[in-house]
Length: 313
Image 1 (cartoon, rainbow, N blue to C red):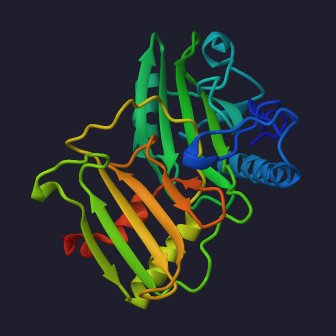
Image 2: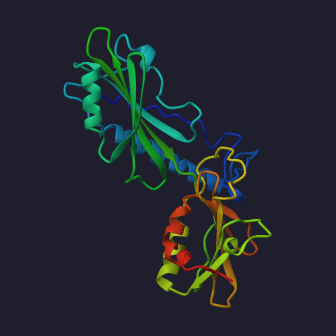
Image 3: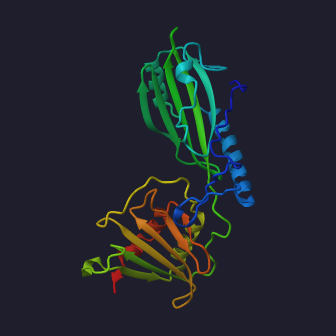
């Protein structure tokens, strides 16, 4: 495979831009008028480099149809369809590697071959067609390096005027937005208290709508919960405006981590369900600003049995 056109780095969000995002309390981003602080700039630069290297490495591992020949740019007669990267221009924090190929067989055959030979470790997420162009996007579900949040490859298949097809593949890695310094659970948790509130904010309610409570001293369970909390990433994007939660569906799960049965509270963790881009997990520690994390549902799955045994007081 050729190397001269191998890498095009797309940097819509840079370390030096005026607006840099940092996970603030509740998962709401904050702007830095003078650029991000040094610790954040250093971590962003490192993650950008990891994503850049990873996207190039994944491009070299793509599975290509028999007879595919790489070209320096869009094959003749296909520039209109293959000139730009095949993802939205406003997607943040993406680094892109791309390449082009000519395939001797027709578009229908080539598409069928690509569907049946996805890149290893990927799943076909979507397919769309416009005119003589069809795009397939495959997402990697596992095996991402530390510092990369997501990785996918979008392959465009276009009929060539002279016969056969042309391909453009774009491997896009989204670098991971880092957690802030000090965003950790203190050591020494010996007790975990759980509250399940089926209607947060509702003052008067029937008995079956009252909060339910449970607690545990199971060290194995507590250690697993704390370990997962330490692994959760910061919110990775500004979610859509979701509006007020549906009262008949929203639950608020609150965990209190203590140094013992009657010990001091080390941290309080809250997660609204059902989870989604607007429902970050929030960690509150005494004397510190709260911070948000994503993928809080993975913590709740560890507490499924405890939630099942929770009872109203």
